[in-house]
Every structure is written in structure tokens, then in C-alpha cells.
Length: 229
Image (cartoon, rainbow, N blue to C red; front, side):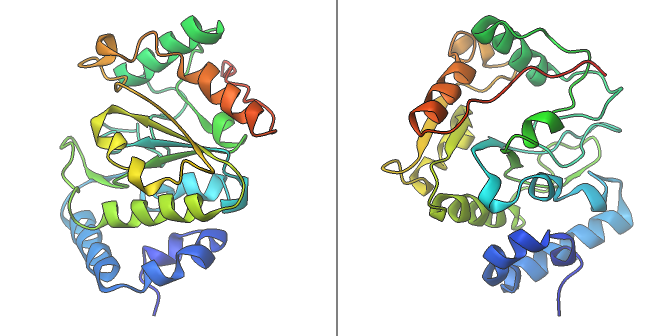
């Protein structure tokens, strides 16, 4: 029987992750998240947990941008790494991403942090951990989400078309061994958080590197400019 978490995984991904969703750890993860939701506020809302997968089907992934943990303050997280809903103040890491995007490609800094237009072009904005207890960062780590997100990375790695994997910071860079670099490309640097952005993220030009990698693979470059809302 499908768990309540598994029932929210989009059909296209359920086909490639079916073995994962029937593993004992996933049932334990489902029970953990259900218990957390019963006792605490958990972000993002249940219907948004798999939004990254809902917006980008396996065959549509061109870039996989790996985050770590959902935003943990009210109204921020909606299932896409680094993204916040319209009307929510841009968090510091995302503000640094926008600053680097302006420096790298000259993109205007938008009045919002809603990254859905990137997802609609094939950027899988995947967090390693997909839920979090309100106001408690990393509160849902080491309960099985990491194994699930690793399975997503492996599924993308198996896809025949070249994908650019974007790994910012030491946590994300530990996933590099999951990527076959004879077929795919990795763009990596320091994390854009205020703690590390000045130690290797600013000036790393990730967006032009991603576009160059896409062009070398014979696919169109990304339009990184986000519209004002």
C-alpha cells in the first residue's frame, strides 16, 4: 500500500523511484513526518513537499541544483530549493545568488524570490531534506530524506541526456560521486549563504558556466532573468 508521502510523488517520478518508495526506510520516514505534522508545524505544507519533482519530469531535467534543507520560517518553503513564495522577503542566501547572477550575467535583481520560472526551463531545485520543523533548521535530517534525494540524483544520473549538476558548499559536493562525469557536468563552488559566500561563491560565475555546459551539450542555454511580480 502506498504511504501518504509516496502518494504525493508525481507519477512520472514514481515510475523511476518505485523501488525506493517501497523500502522500509521510506515507510519509517512517512511515519516520522506524519508524527511531526501531528505535533508541530512542518514546512512546506504536505501538498508542496514534492513540488520540485512536480514541475520537472525526469526527462525534462537539464540542471539539478541541490539545496540542503527547506526554509524554516513562516510562508517561505514551497518545495523548491532556495525559492520562496511571491510576497515573501528574499532570504540572505537567495539574495547572494541574485547578486552573483547580476555580476555574472548582468541579470536585474527581481522583486521576488520565486524560482518557478527556472524550474519551468528544466532546473530541478532539489533539497537533500524535503521537510523541516518550523523555526528549527535541520530538524528533519537523518530520518531518510537524504536516501530519497540520493535516489533522485541517481535517477537523473542514469538519464541518457547530459545534465548539469550544481553543487554549492561542502554538503552538496559530497554528492559528486553519484554523478557520472563522463556524461554529465558538475559546477561547484562555495555555498551562497552569508557565512561562506565571500569565500568562493562570489565571483564563481556559476550561471555562465551552466550555460556554457548546456551549449557544449547541444542544448539551449537557460534564461536566468526572473520577472518582477
